[in-house]
Image 1: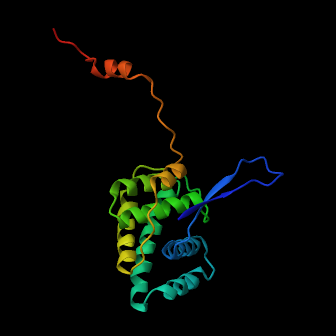
Image 2: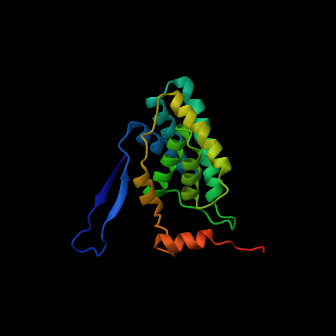
Image 3: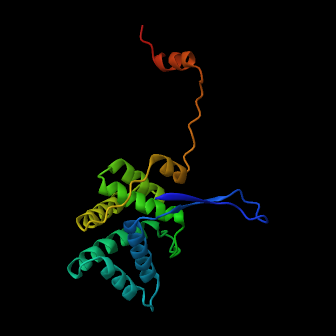
Length: 191
């Protein structure tokens, strides 16, 4: 994965936009399959399902298409139900590149069996803390991809931190002596 910086046009007041560029074959394959499946969820009439099946068959053997489709459906539906608000409002069928980044980070972390990064990715993706079912579905999908030889490229901490928009923690006590005094001070002294 590489990160592409698009500089603003002369007439644009923005400072620049950073978008992830997913160059790997596995990343392109997974994102296209996921986009097509999401489109089938929101379209009653359309050919997204046929296009999805054709897309899967370009890379997979005929006997593995059903397994991948089942795991993809399971993961997609878990995500869909988590992101659908309880007030009945519909979510958009198109995700931003930031959403897709966290989806790939989730699957890639599951391929490496990094449960902490998988949890962090799922929380960032869905903006929710109850993500256990999404992680379970992602683990199954990630394992299926690995079994088929589709390994996602590792996502580094710097890229993840950038897209998660983590801010550095502010230190109330900058000097080490003040910090040591506060951390060593007992909360309750028994005499």
